[in-house]
Image (cartoon, rainbow, N blue to C red; front, side, top):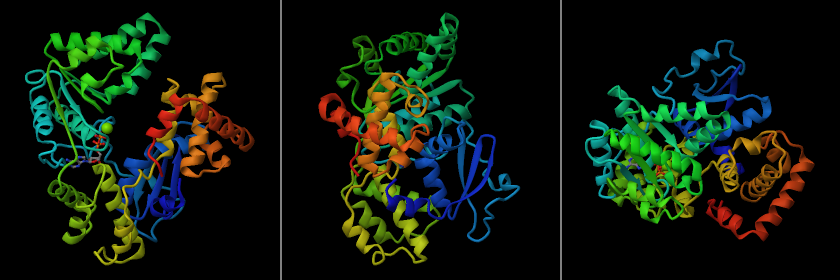
Length: 420
Ligand code: ADP
Ligand code: MG
């Protein structure tokens, strides 16, 4: 990762304990812990996986400065016991934490309506909009509400759906039946980022049948997408038209008033006093999405905490002036996922042992992007991409560069990855 990102988020962290499948890392503030858990969890897990050679969960926990022994025998005691009620759902993404504004009013109301009476109102409910505007948040909020009502629901990203389906197909007829059955018996199915079903014929076909079965039985389907269903050209026509049966609504960039309210909410959550003029200054900046706004406020808060100075318009003057819409602090995991997806492979194909041509090519593209976008060196990239040695990676980076130069399809995928 870029050095400033490291300095902001990870520099003060201390490893606390590592047991069979969990690494506990102490960080100095609740805000940093929350940010790391939500933004860098995936990358941390794959990095640790690469080093220890086993699937390992990483938990960032808060420990007051000076009280963090680096090898606490009972470090587990510090770990938050607040495991989310459903591991698929981000505990923070609730309706209560969602700020309503004209940009999301209909989507917010519709999401609540389907959560309160699944299958009864809008079926399916499709929420579309650009990245970072609250689609996943709303979908998880529906899940939390369904969970509290004891409804049988499942939240899946469409990538997960593809991977699960592909795995079932590999295991044969019985597993496919089980797969179908497990979906058809739900009260509600929540599918995030349906656009990634593009080109996955098998999964689309299966999803189409699951959709019909659920819909026929008045079971709820909620879908998010980065485009309105009609624009999802790569989706099967029948599926596209079904998605338009219910309510199609969008989320867009909130106005400055809503952004102010969202920032206030974030500051409250972080238990940090952020003066109104700072919030207002941020809310009136040009931003691309809320996630970015959150990220910027987060960095300001963390920087102020580290410097031990209060957050004021003065103290952030320089950053504010230099502020330009910025990329996510986390990108390595995202880059690997996108490179894998471009080749129709699961992420593990790149980080694991696979040696076939397709996996190797995808890995080369990922290596090249990791080098170019995140300025990682071959040693670092090797650690992330399945403990491969420097020389292999140096070669991969060159091959990847060539592939990206030669193949317009790959160029497009690369151009969709935010610039640093
Ligand atoms: P998307 O799925 O549309 O890309 P997310 O749901 O992941 O976006 O939202 C990005 C971030 O912005 C999340 O942390 C989410 O909690 C926050 N966010 C987006 N919209 C709102 C809102 N209206 N109120 C509060 N937080 C929001
Ligand atoms: Mg999302």
